[in-house]
Image (tube, rainbow, N blue to C red):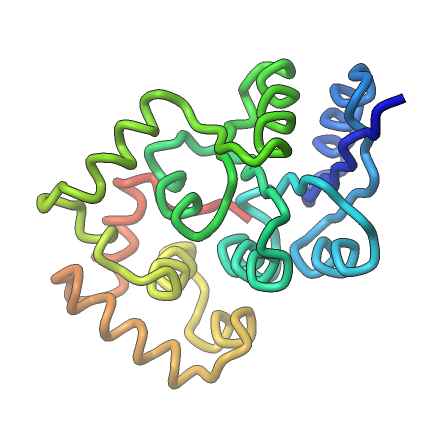
Length: 214
């Protein structure tokens, strides 16, 4: 028998994990090797177990998923990571793919798409839609980018957390940095995006659909 693809499912909702596991249980070549409810738990399982693919939910409590993605990529550069999201590709996919994800799939996608995505990234390929392929290509050339696209990944994380209503102190604890560091990021974010305060930042994030629900 050929070796099965060992998959880790990371999502903070048990019912979602169960649903994904059920879909994968109907395949002949994919095995659910573990489940995790947050990024830190996922990292521990990846360090302790031999895995072939990681499914990573974009919105979980605790450390931001973009930060978790970078940590996994730093420690396990060859481990394929498929981002699962309730948000459409145009909001977050480009940033996550540039940060090292192997693919991006919305949770409303059919089960056969999930299976196809896992098989494809396990073979060393990327899994993205034709529309996203075009967006990635133009993102390199497009000089007329939205203001938030000029932010670094850390600044983008801080912007999303500020827009979700978290305080500088809360964000500092979540990202394991000092409140002063977060305040510095906030100043740079406002300057880059030509905004005056948190209220304008929150309004912008809401209009662009960038407020991640945790």
